[in-house]
Structure formats: structure tokens, C-alpha cells
Length: 252
Image (tube, rainbow, N blue to C red):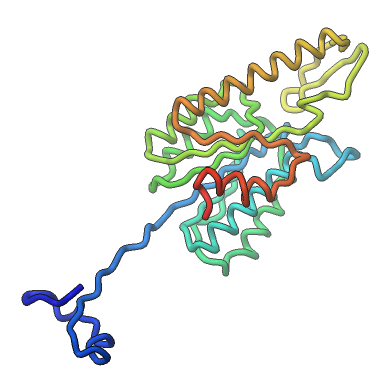
């Protein structure tokens, strides 16, 4: 803007003054210093499908690709990035870091991650919320299989001022199980077994309960202002970052 008497001479734009011989004062706008927290569920259920099946549809690998893609976008934007992989047994963090120069270290960190045990999202997200000193954009990548639920964990993040995104990752065989007959199913996290008979009626009940569960999560997120995305691992993971998040205004 035009200089007026009393303005700080240190804010004068001397280059413009030299060209135009008119005094102007520079107006500066602070860039937003965004903190990006990406949380990855590394419980044993994320290993589905098991080895021998289509490895590209494994939930952990798919989630790690999204994990890496989001991290690279954040580093490219020079955001303050904190990555956390967690289950009930351990928590592995990378950061806080900034800048593309951290990309190789970031990829090595992700490559080292494995899935094991259980993840109680209420417990782990509340602990994460207490540890973080800066509110920001917090993205939770999980299959949402949590023994006590997830509501208290999301509330804890929101109470600390975070903008929360839930990326719900499921494998196609969890949405449409390729099973039939008399089976003994074993929980990969607890080891508990259940004898079941899967027929047309049981499939219908399964789909009804699955859809009710997804609607419950979607509704709980919507009521709290949490962004919710359900991703099947047979869908291109790049689409989520380049299209879905852009439409939601979360990625530029």
C-alpha cells in the first residue's frame, strides 16, 4: 500500500521505490504452520488377506501406501509431520520432521512396520491426544476393529482441537467373504474360535450387520465433524489422495 507518515521505514519496498520513485509499504501475510499427524493401526487384523492371497489387497500394505502418500504430500508442503504406528504392544513414531529431504527416512520407517496384536482405538487415540502438544490435521488409518470401540478416542482428539480424518480400510473378502459350509473361524488377534455354518441366509445376515456397522461409523463421524472415508483395498489408493481428499478440501 502507499506509504503514510508514521509507517515503519523497515517495511518500505525499496525496489519499487527505485523503479517508480513512489514509496510503498510491504504487507506480509504469515503462512499457516500446519501440523499433520498420521496414525496407522498396526494390529494383526491389518494383515488380512493372509500370505498366499493377493498381496496387493492386503490391508497393511494398502494402508502403508496411503500412509506414505499422505506423508509425502505433507513433506512437499513443508508441513510439520508426525507419523505414528500403533497397537497395544508398541508405538513407533517418525518425526516431527519437515521437508522433502526426509522422504527416504520416511519410507524406511514405513517399510520397517509390521502388524501384530490388537489395537484398542479408544485407549491408543486418547493416549496419542495427550502426547501431542500441537493441534492439527490428524488422519487415522484403521480397519476399525477395536474391542471397546472408537468414539472416546475420536472425542479425545477433537477436544484437543484436532481436525480428524478417518480412513477405514477393508479387504474385499471382508465385505464379501468367499466362504461357505461348516467352518471353524479363528480370530487372528485373540485366537478365539467360533464354529459357524455359512449359507445364503447367513450371508444375508452378515451383509446386514456389516452395512449397519459402516452406517454407524459414518454417522458417528458426521455428527462430530470428522471426515470419513471407507476404502476397499481393490480400489486405487492413489485415487483417495488425488481425488477424494481434494474434493474434501484436505489436499491442495
